[in-house]
Image 1 (cartoon, rainbow, N blue to C red):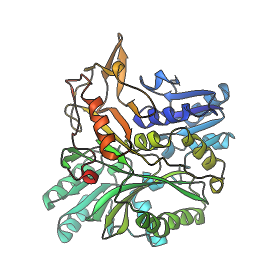
Image 2: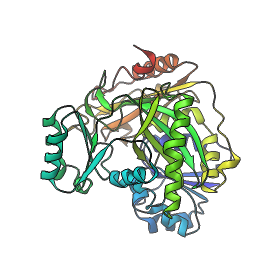
Image 3: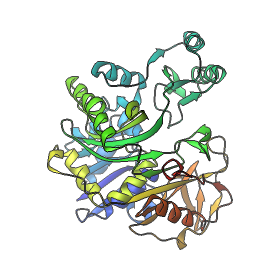
Image 4: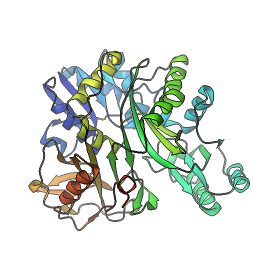
Length: 422
C-alpha cells in the first residue's frame, strides 16, 4: 500500500515508525513531516489544512490510505474531502471532530446521552462568566471552547486565577478558540487517557496511558501540551474501563450516529477517576501527543492493521494483541516553554542513541541546518523506551535523555511518578 500520514510532530513520527514496520506498507509519505520522520519515510510539502490539495497529492501519488494525525485538519474537514474523493481515510469528519473542536458541543452530547462529566456553564461574554465564577468559587476550571493546541484549559485554584483566565480568553490570548468559554466544576481524582477505535458502529479499546500536563516535577507550574506519558495506566483498571465504555464511550458513539454524524477514527477520552468511577474530562479526536508515542511503541506493526479495519468498517473482525510490557516517554522541551522560548539551539548526541523496537527518539520541533539538528519548537523530542516493568522503561528512557547534549533544553525528571510511587 501507498500510505500518506498528515502531520509534523512527535505523534506523526510515532505513527510513521509503527506503520513502516508493517509489511503492507510499500511507500510511506508524511506531510509535511520533520527531520526525524525523514529518516524513515518520504516527506512532502503540502498544506495539510487544504482538503483539495491533499486530494490532488493523493491522486498524483497513487495513495491508498490516508491517516490524519493532528486535530486541525480534521476540524477543517480534510477527512471529508479525502473520503469524497474515494480515498480510504482514518479520522473523523469535521462534524464528528466537533467532539474536540468545541467543548460546548461535547457537553451537549454528554447531556443527551447521560454520560457522567463535570457540571458546566457556557458563556460568550466576559461579565456573566465572571459573575458565575464569583458565585461558584474556586477551585474551578475555565476552558476555551475551541482548539487551542492543548493550552486552552486553566485549572484555577483561586478565584483570582479564574477571573484572570476569563480576561485572557475574551481578550484574545487563544484567538477564535476563546470566543466562547466553558466553565466547569473542578473534578478531584486522578486523570488518565483511554483510547478507543471506532468505525461508527463497532468500538475497540486499544490502550490506556497517563500524561503529565504540568511543566514541572511533582505536577507543578502551568499546563503544557504534555511533558511525558506512560502506558498502561494502572489507575484505569479493567473494571473502570468497562464502566467508561458502558456509560461514556458507547453512549457517545450511539448519539453521534443518531445525529447523522457517525464517528470514525480514534476517540481519545480523557477521564477523571475518583472512588473507582470515571467521569469524562474531554474528548480528543486524534491520538494524544505524547500518549501516541507510548501506544505506538507497544502496538508496533499491528497499528496499521487496526487503523485499516477502522477505516474499512470491520473493527468487529480484529483484536489488539498486547505484549505484557510498559512504555514511557519523556518530552524534552526548549527552555522557557510553555512561555516564550528561543529557537535555533543545537541538539547533539542523537546519532549515538539506539533506534530499535524498544528504544526510540521521536522528533517533534526539530530541523536540520548545515548538518546540525536544531530546536524549532517548544516540545522538541520524545525520548521513549519499553520495558518489562514501568521502572525498567523509565530507567531506559532517562538513560537516553542523559546522553543527549542540549543545554538549551529541559525535561521533567519524574515521569511515571504516580504509578511508581516515587
